[in-house]
Image (cartoon, rainbow, N blue to C red; front, side, top):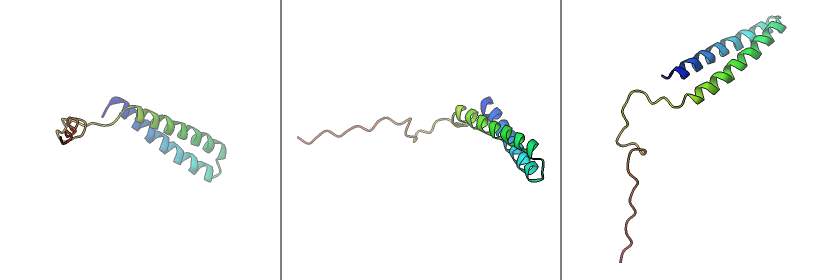
Length: 82
């Protein structure tokens, strides 16, 4: 996993936790604190999703597969019959 992806996962986890905490606080009567927690949690989730998307696909440690379409040559077109 890339370093950017690790940061993004931390943002996603923190944002989701803070959002749930904010909803719980709002439901129990602490509306002002809960609303701030929800706003910060959503902001963390959005920034985490953005960073995770910018990190690119997770290619893993496997070498490229010979059967994958990106590594195979383009198919040749058959010549028309004469």
